[in-house]
Image (tube, rainbow, N blue to C red):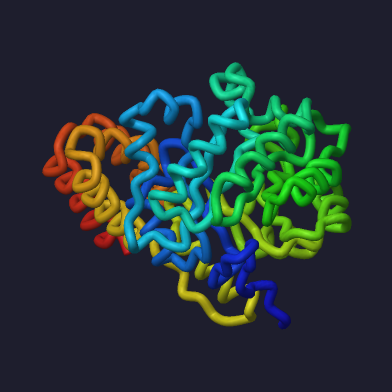
Length: 329
């Protein structure tokens, strides 16, 4: 079987593989990014940072730009409606060690859209071009664009946005193959994605609903040079290694449910080290359901976990659950 997995060249930077961790707000922080690097990701993307918030020197946003040497190759993502502000944010991201910087023009979240950023930028492609051009001129590292194939389910904007990205100097484009109105539900529109790949002179990174090797293969078969995995990596950071082995025709030993929960406990501990106990545990509560999926009595364990206030409580609950699950095997 010919493998779709290969190095990914984005401008002057080459990633070891073309499997990418998607940026996800509240999830793809440093501890999780490091875990996904260990899980075989060729590039990890940070949570998107507001260019406007950085202009006001928001401590939270500034902290989001901090990096660790263990999480490279690293792409930082910036969003904003003002070209000058986005350019300044890109400079800050570069100074903090970003290997690549991505501009978001596809987020459907209302708070982001009200600021004139995210997917509303798709209504004014010339604005995207202005922002990208300013970003490219502001830094030496490659600039990429992340957007969607359409706003609705009928009008295909993918070829136009791809052309705008490459004409504006972007080194790659990531296309979420769902319409903005669909947010994260429904099947990806592979026909729209393929139409963009046919006109692209820069790498197209396909995104949207990739949960396994077959989903990734379908994306690659449109002509995409890379795939970006989001929710499929939550609770399963070794999905990158799994896809790599599967598409190369190699055997892969699936990570057991017990191993996933052990991995999650380690992630909670890393979150506590990174954020402090209160915030570290609070952030972990957002994703616990993903990690417990398929685990014995998962609903009960999750209910106990979300009431935890200390790391000692977390350890007690998860270690007990692991022991009981192993007794059932």
